[in-house]
Length: 492
Ligand SMILES: [Zn+2]
View (spheres, rainbow, N blue to C red):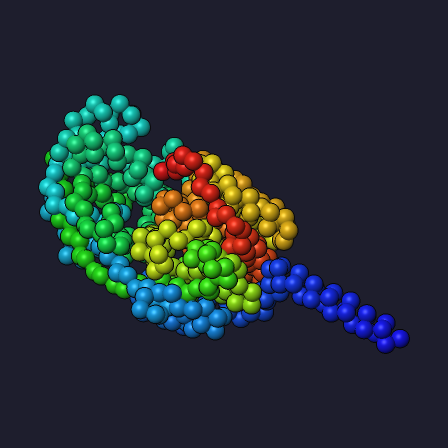
């Protein structure tokens, strides 16, 4: 009898040890808790953060909240000087209120009577020339050198079946004509607003009055001097068509510098060799601040964009704390994404870990809305795919876990949103680091004050978090780092 008990104890303990080992080799998926995702999301999207606009104290305040949460999750600081923070400077160029615009002797009030959609200096005195661009031959044949060319804006030939069409309309119209006109020597381009232009006028003001942002060395860091582009209301049409009328434009640009910040934390890997390599989890902490009201609300809390990923990264950090991987994991909550992927451009070129030690970047942006059963993976097909290994692991993780139906349209080069080019994996991919981008794509409340926590599907957010985690876990434990595809070349 005693012998039987001993045998039983032996078998039981062997089984128990085996079970423990097996458990440890599986991802700590249970550490991703919907209740914690929801709690963190509500905190980060509260109105007191005032929409976390880059370069303002609101972004800095949100970054302190994130760093504290990262510490609680068990991350070690991996920013500058033993902190969670990597500060960098935003360079902002903005059209000055001292700018003056006159037609003959009549002054036009900046932003109210005249809209300048590009931030560039100019000092131009030029005769106006009205062009009927419904006659394409006029653009080339007319003697437009040195003239301020006046055009009736038109949506003809433009695909406006895109997100935020009103805000993007002036830029689209400009691109349609600018290179032909500028190459032919136009001194300025003047658009007379059509119906779409009048509708878009208010919509573009928040962006154009704020101006351009960049990091040091970037193309927008220094103000350019360019032939000015001006939008006038339809009411100015007869004046603008008057023979002999003159444009006098003195566009002055002011320069500002502000701090922005990346939050960086890490969990060291368990393997003596592989722990020198990092798998980077990426998202952005900033959003659009306070701007155009919709109804009573003017605070752009950016719940989907991109508080969802911020809190997903905290949950993923907890899983790696519960069960570290062989490689080290690195979490970067980028600043100033909405101002042009500036935090990721900065981190990619100024990493706080040794150069070439980042073996993969898993970025996510907007992961909590739309159809509960579908999601998109970008960087998953040519020409955007820079690592087949990574994509295969992501698909495998999806099959083992959430089983999303994968939307492949958004990754196509002909997709009108060019979505691949609009989030923080891009600067890393451009530097030759394997990178993929998880998203549940756009929705009607994108970049409006209605993107609030109440619109987030917590169950879907949980499954997206699990998917990203499962993919990262595979990458972080595999003996080989993900390979790059050969001849990777993006179409823009
Ligand atoms: Zn975003």
